[in-house]
Amino acid sequence: NAGVTQTPKFRILKIGQSMTLQCTQDMNHNYMYWYRQDPGMGLKLIYYSVGAGITDKGEVPNGYNVSRSTTEDFPLRLELAAPSQTSVYFCASSSMASGGAIDTQYFGPGTRLTVL
Amino acid sequence: AQKITQTQPGMFVQEKEAVTLDCTYDTSDPSYGLFWYKQPSSGEMIFLIYQGSYDQQNATEGRYSLNFQKARKSANLVISASQLGDSAMYFCAMSLRNYGGSQGNLIFGKGTKLSVKP
Image (tube, rainbow over all chains, first blue to last red; front, side, top):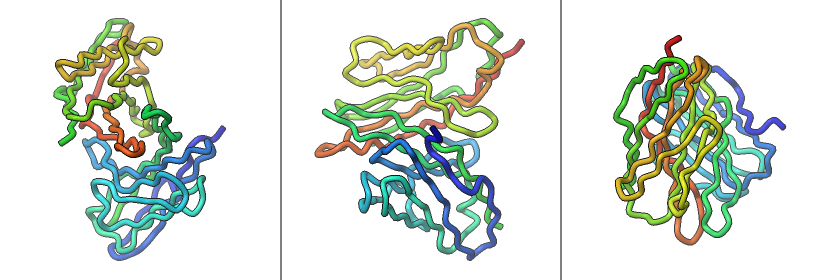
């Protein structure tokens, strides 16, 4: 069982370049999330999705876009890379909570992005 | 506003001893979940333990236990019998329920770096 997979593991971009971070989960989870982790900090939510075709902004969405065409995939796109986007990016997923229960999020291994 | 506070940037513990990592939270929502994640130097986020706001008993998972004091809004992680492999960053996180649905976004603290000494 692969869980949550992310590609690439590492990437260096030049200012102004674009790229897509891939995230796939095989647990049939409805909820998917993108977080970024800056050095010495906790994770901050960029975007999330509660199901295919439904996405919404998190705490730090500027400079990013997402789409969710399938349950399994939740790619994150950086359109015009800036040095401030140098960070480690984590994708996570969780199952739909029933009766208001809050389910555990499972994380991918992360993508380390450097923008020079 | 919802917030997680971890006041210990770094902690040292002797191998085989117990250690407590502090976490306080702030929310006015009555329904929430509290999580602890471990992040070793390799970078992955490993789920350790979960406590729901309505759970009557403190959560336990092997050597991990969560000391949940609701009135004080604290959710400290206790690691018993520390091992060298426990050396890592530890993050406390809170998940809120969105009324009308459940979205479960996590709010993280800044983390505590635990170092286990042989």
